[in-house]
Image 1 (cartoon, one colour):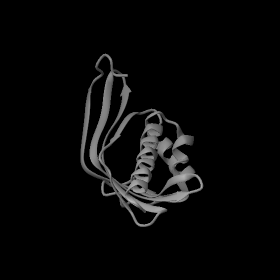
Image 2 (cartoon, helix red, strand yellow):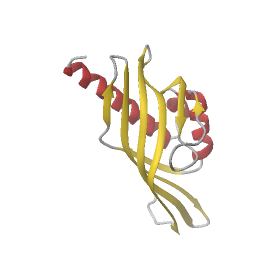
Image 3 (cartoon, rainbow, N blue to C red):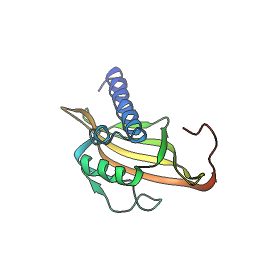
Image 4 (tube, one colour):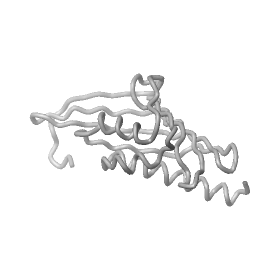
Length: 153
């Protein structure tokens, strides 16, 4: 793959990941399912090291995510990926991540703020680039409870 094509494919993968985190925050579960391959293995739940049991398949991953996040306000931000191509149709990526998950009840907000990485594998298919493996690892997790501040969306 020449340098120009590598830039084009890198941007396509970056767009895929941007769609993934937007779909999570907007609770667009069908959109979320569409970024994964049907055989994708995801380790996004469980312990902070991302070594819990894998969820397999885009629909199952989206459904599991919906089960955990429905009713929560979320903000996911990813930054400056390291993307490496193994071939014209396969790649891996590491994405620095920070996310916030919050719920509100009885005038209080309970929240979790975390920092870590997504480690992913990708395959270019007739549907474009898709995530074929996804692992979340957390380096730092902060939890808190505070009064709801006016203006919190």
